Length: 212
Image 1 (cartoon, helix red, strand yellow):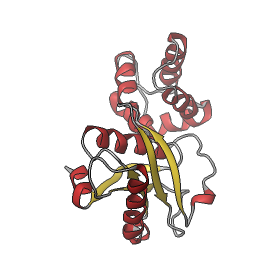
Image 2 (tube, rainbow, N blue to C red; image 1 turned 120 degrees about the horizontal axis):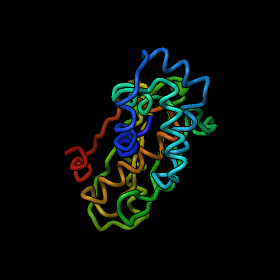
Image 3 (tube, rainbow, N blue to C red; image 1 turned 180 degrees about the vertical axis):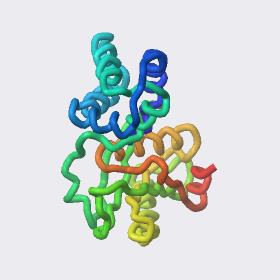
Image 4 (cartoon, rainbow, N blue to C red; image 1 turned 30 degrees about the vertical axis):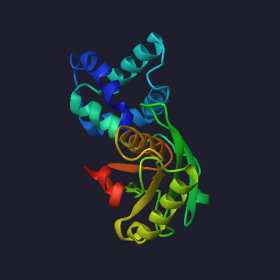
């Protein structure tokens, strides 16, 4: 599942809409056998820095696979990745990860909790927890607060079949906070099969503004 793929979708639509189509079931079967998912993943992971030749190759392969309408294209972009890294060490633990914002010049960390009962072989929910505080916190305080909030919300994980993430923001939840949330989602979706229709944001105090 790939939240950063909207722009790529716009790039591909014009070329795809003029071709003839097939059913989504047939498209999925052909895509699996021809490596379409892997090709799309690789293209998206380059964050649109791919060459003209790579773009044309992707268009041609999608066309061959019968991806011929906006609905077909959305189905490809919203599907699970071809493969995921081994994240078994995360299960049942709170882990700390670095993240660089994709839209603003800001980098920080986030804490992730994968409940031990969670089946990561299936699509999972993602709950983002916004911590309280202020917009001029030290990194140490932001991380301590984020981890505390994550632990407070951890019981939601098993109940919602969800992975929980608490970004540590030293700059509040305005423009930088919004970028931080989206950047965390983008990074986590590359590691775990997050369902794009089951992404939720919650928080308290200052962190509650991240929900608005």
